[in-house]
Length: 356
Image (cartoon, rainbow, N blue to C red; front, side, top):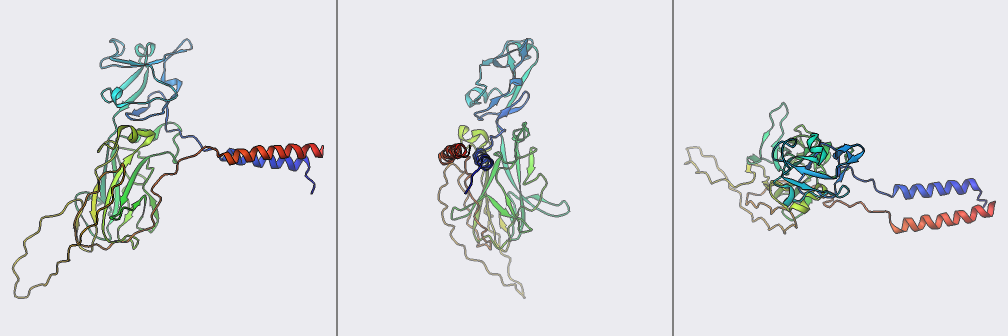
């Protein structure tokens, strides 16, 4: 079989393309520009040159924090950051939130480097109703078949407005855990579609999943969910925030919401006190009390909030496919791909020389 120069070059181009496409795209959510908001606990941030004041082609190299006016007072704290791997440690930044300035020349020039905030995170459960009558049901009652949505209350939305952030970048994750320890990262909505509840990019301080407006994200009456109680929580580990601060309720994780479903009204997150039964009348209405079942103990989950346990009457709720609970990390180009590229290039060189 003839193998001319044109064929060899075409083969080489295809091989190199495979190698290039094997390289994962780098995230932009850690790129910080002048005036961005950064959060205590973030790590490996890349500070752009525009963060620092430039005078005569010379950049400032330090950052300063002021309790008073920068132009007329001395800084309360000065640091020399790593521009390629900046870490907002709790010890340095928790009590120094607000504006940070480029220093020394940028302070007098009013050159803001960035703003620091301490993260805040809460999760609400909403009952969806068409016509604008949806309501907060976090501490209310639900029935099987209820259409539910999640509202994320936080100050984390500036993370996702940074220059170059992609939809595939990390976000806020919501988890729904069953009694037997299985964890859902996607749910069936009222149209039967699977809706992801991870890597959510919130756009404001009270954000409804998935796009900002209240809707049906979880059809609790879907035949996919089995009987039992469910525990719901959210967490944020963007740029290592949770890893560095820990699982702090209201900061990097939310308080868990306990929920139980059945064919009658049941509580969400707490058990109601028993009500007195009225005396029977001449034509009494016979009622039956479902037997209480013991809720099995959910195995402990590492680094997640402890599930809220509620002993409730048995519910009617099925289980959907178990979505992947762990994010697969991006990996560098494998050794196999590199070796293949080298061998292929060597073979091509030999073939080209033979055909010259």
